[in-house]
Length: 221
Image (tube, rainbow, N blue to C red; front, side):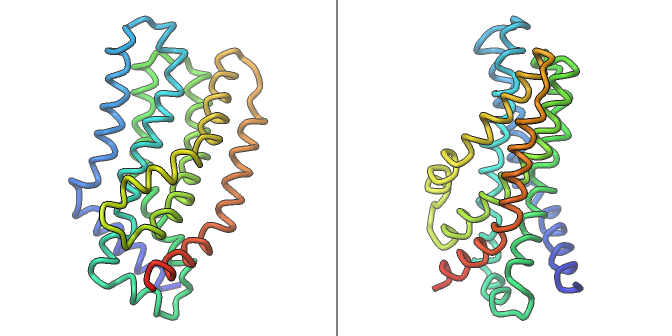
């Protein structure tokens, strides 16, 4: 396990040194959400209705900003080729890269969600439902997104192609997540929606590392 731990520490240190890029998803997340009340007005009832969808759309778009650099630097300096040729299983390496991306790019967004929930006039029940859906759904964003990043890692300006590939795939997650928060707002149970999100997460967790490894090998050929 020592190579895996070393890779995890290395990626965390590199993320810390690239604080400007690290702040981009967070700033974009806050900017998108803060602009919506200015566009639709300060009416609390309106903001309460659109708030969960706004936060989730902002989280998806913000995750795309961080995903583009998931394998970019390793590809440019040749480290990715060495990882593929190493004796360490490539799916394990891919899982470490995804975990690092989630911790450095998406977890800060979740930590900001209480402030933004108050800003959008979400009540306590809606906030807790939103928090659970973010904790379950955002790792899915990283896992599925990493597959597309691995396929486009060798392309110049692959960000637009990345968005075209991923946004339609994330629509079911967006529907179930916002439905759970809406159910919480009406004081209805939302365990079914959480179960669907958890099932998608477990399915992605089981298969995505192998898909990412295969995509990386294809992109190197």
